[in-house]
Image (tube, rainbow, N blue to C red; front, top):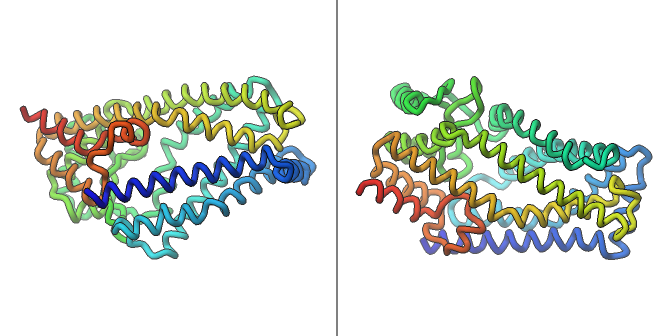
Length: 363
């Protein structure tokens, strides 16, 4: 427990430091003469608008990546390695980060190009941007897990036919059809364990970390899976898409107001001036920070409902409790954070609260 509290405390401090570095970088670009010259030069170094936007984006993200890479290395590699969560070699970890960066950069650049194209076309760019993002998120939710997961994990059909049928029977009992049970080779990277139900409709499948199979008895695996099935039965993917779409709409509307206010403040040539990208990025970062407690509160509500579903579906509260305790040890979960930390930072209820809720169901 002491290790878990210390680990999460260090992670929070590093996250705060990363936010400070990112904010300071954007503020320097906006409010120092050198930063404004740098942003203006980047925006004017190409002739076409799409090339200008692309160049500003590459320069902005590239410098930010260089500034924050040491913190990312400590947070993502050194600290988990120090506390025994990670045993992946540095080379493999870096390769995973490169693959994630390439995917994120491609999607991010396409998104920014689309935003600035709409900025140049209509003052209602925030409305159209929200609509396009919503459609894209729906499409990605259906296919991305199947496209992306094989880039980071080897997925193989579960060899234990008896366990596979047992888990598929739980899914059928919950009213969720899956095409099969697959195993991800998490053990070559980390000791952490989990399960997931990924995809939508005919692409839906059950994925188990091999660490779950090696460390958990079947009844505990059932409890972990039943929690994940609860999200699908409750329509949490659909509900999350709708809520995220509504929040994104408000976020972009507020960003539009801030961007218009920044045009005279920073001497921009209109809202679609690529030199204004640092200002737009700073506004979106600030709005994301403000909505973090709300997003986490919504997520904790969904997770509590999924826990309750797992308890009802399996009818085995002791197995659920044992699974939570084992997951907490393997994943180094902080069992009882302060209420304030939980409200602001936690997307799941605190471990002790989840266990206490399960024990109460036995009464």
